[in-house]
Length: 327
Image (cartoon, rainbow, N blue to C red; front, side, top):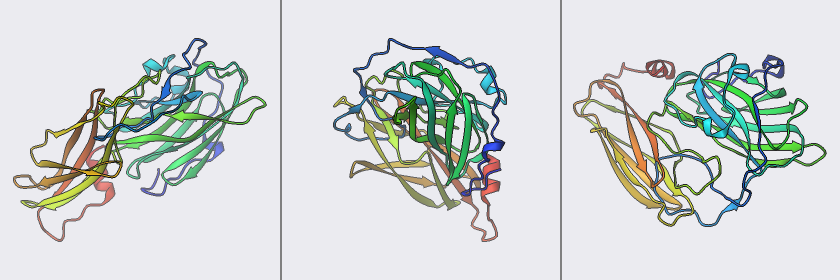
């Protein structure tokens, strides 16, 4: 098991690699004149980002589901539209990785590389690569995955890359960074990485498969943790912004938790959302609420987890006991 803040990622030999049914669908008629909208979610408000980046050749999308040890041979996903990017699932959760050709090319793929990251309060369990031989290298709160693909995969194929299985407690995301694909005899190309979010039952912001314009709600965290005594108040803050090409891309903030109050302050590149938690009338223990950001396209949500103590200096809670409450 992964220690909090000190992930132990298995070596190459520990990653399961075996022949299995490839989940692949050929694509050859995708449009190539769209604009890239950067991915993410959050709870946010801000003017849209100026400009646009070129459309990526491909993306690796993350699908969130309950754990299936036979994921590589049993998954039924054959198109990007079937991928679940946001889920309320917690406990042992699979984050399935799928290669999606955005601007298809006929070249054969030799290698695929990416880095995945998760919150320090989640636990590493295992990885299973479906499309070839892999090396998994541990990095802080994440792993670098280097894959040599089996013969036959091309940049026109939708296919299952593999899964990363994590112990999920509290809202968070599996993020993908520094993804690239290497066609036969060529240098690597950049590949976009689309995150998957778990333990988040209210968010709806997802990356459109065709990269159509979208007003994303974003935040620099998925979980805000606060602590106070019975009858007292405490504050926390996260940074949020909205992004999209439409000048009307903005957001409205709200919360359904009657013990939370919000203040939105304009800041550089977005807004600071100041969250005040009032423990008046709350029993000692753990309480969870959500800050919701509504854009014209979707909802983004940040969980606020409040620990209320009775004021006794003897009351202490470890990370392990806190995590056990939410498993």
